[in-house]
Length: 250
Image 1: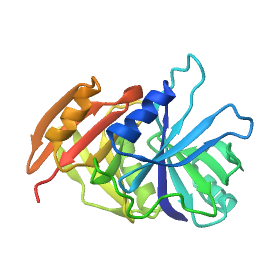
Image 2: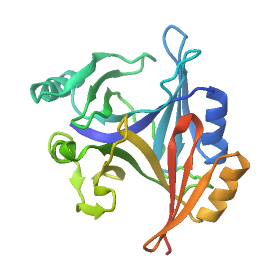
Image 3: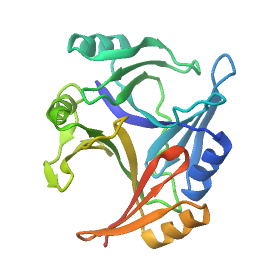
Image 4: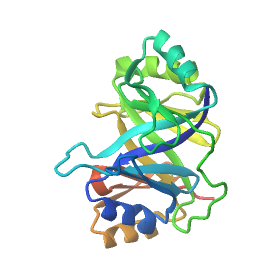
């Protein structure tokens, strides 16, 4: 049913400022810039390493900013995917309809932990293979934090209907963590109290120190730490998006 994790949706308060950050500070490449059919909304897809984010414009005074959803490209008819998940008790917030840009069809639902997932049916894949990025080595994962009670239902859903391969469950000081992969894309499922559940984007970098310097130039606060063999840099990006950069020794 799932062909790939297509993109992560982010709603921007100051659109041009946020676009500048992901394009220039993180070395992203704009691969699609479009507007809704009524001309009121703008959607910009930016490829960061081998992953893609979608910047969504906001209305004046809107407070629901930052990480919004995880979108999956389907390899079956969208209505078929909708009926399959509906029969399993998933709650759809948007039923299958034409995408706002007019390009493809989409639907939105909440997975068992409450994170918003989007299903997309499109003819083409917008991601560019082997696209060069001078700042990031790779888009490592997106993190979804759920309550302890929701952890296993989420894991079962990812393994089952979503068709992800599951890594081992790791126990941390904050609770269980498990990675789920579909091809080159990864979702990190973690126990936590975040609301909404979609909490963080993680990237691999050659140097956390160099990345820290880039972020400090933008006035962002950073926190460097060491976890086993990895050096980790945590920061808060535009619109309150939590960003993590991981440097793993070769």
